[in-house]
Amino acid sequence: MRQIYLFAAFAFLAACGSNPDKTKTEEAATTTDTTSTVKQETLTYPYTADYSSDFEIGDAKNAQTLLQVYKDWDDNKTDNFKNSFAEVDTMYFSDGTMFAGGRDSLVAMAGKARAQMGTVVDSVHAWVPLRSKNKNENWVAIWTREISTDAKGKKTAKELHEVWRFDNNGKINLVYQYEQRPPKMPPPPPKKK
Image 1 (cartoon, helix red, strand yellow):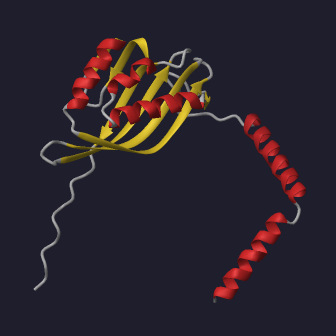
Image 2 (cartoon, helix red, strand yellow):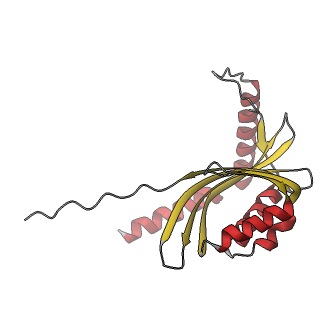
Image 3 (cartoon, rainbow, N blue to C red):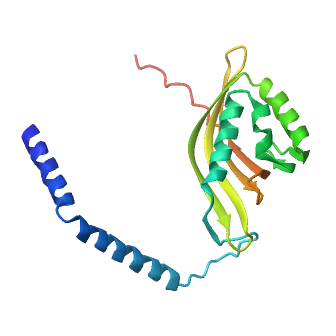
């Protein structure tokens, strides 16, 4: 059985490497055909976006900035991310509260909130930098699970979806946060006798 898998693997590698120029040409033709088809197709949506529906992939540097903010949050080094924010910022939190004010006040508030959380570990599921073409605004959408452990050892987990807007200088100036707490698991069924 092992010999069959080995043979199949060699056959696959040989087929992939047999004519690299032809493969590149076919890939380029396919990409060109797909792109032109997408641009020619007109779609009618049942809704009109209030903000924008014309997005493209944005600057990856904004995603890098945001991920460093997350790392500093996890490491309880909130002063480190001060320069990632604009002079004036607005944040809408998942609990319904909001912050609107200067960067120094934001960093001070973040430091106090973070100090009460104990250890924090974010498991980042995905992120995508975006640019709204018709608004000329840059955003990063991120999905993560944040697990915090307080001084008594109690763990709290939450799934977060956040959308962060960046100004033209690459500074964060607006955040929307959405949260879902993982469901509580029901107790195990009683053992059969």
